[in-house]
Image: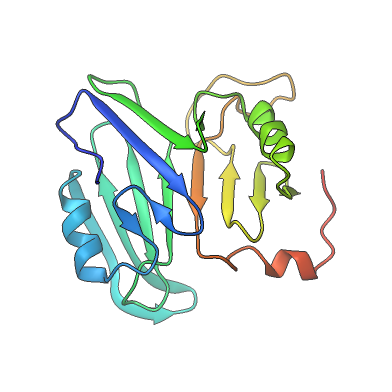
Length: 178
């Protein structure tokens, strides 16, 4: 089931490493584009490209949220990045295992992930990653937002769901936790 752009309630469920509501990992590019068009305006960048630094991207622009779909081989969905919903007429919620990702303060969400027994890496000031599960979270904001006691945005601003091994290379490197 895809999130319906005309509904009063839009629920997007993150199911790493399998994808997000209506967009399973591995979905063919043509189906990603068609499904994204059901959400709103679509922008496609580098169509069919499998270049490492310029993979194909499909951006779904809804009035209240945006989702960036990455197709690293130019043919199939590799990763989905959902950005924090904006206020509007619909109630938009992004869920991960029953937790409202964008309405739970970021550091509380990280603590909850750790209570679930997940390994959470904090390799950059505003980024957290969950290897094996392939969930990535960022607090970086391109606009003014409420700040937490640490001076960073109070809530995560974007979340990425990738395939099983998306963040696993980080486990082989020595990254300090901040």
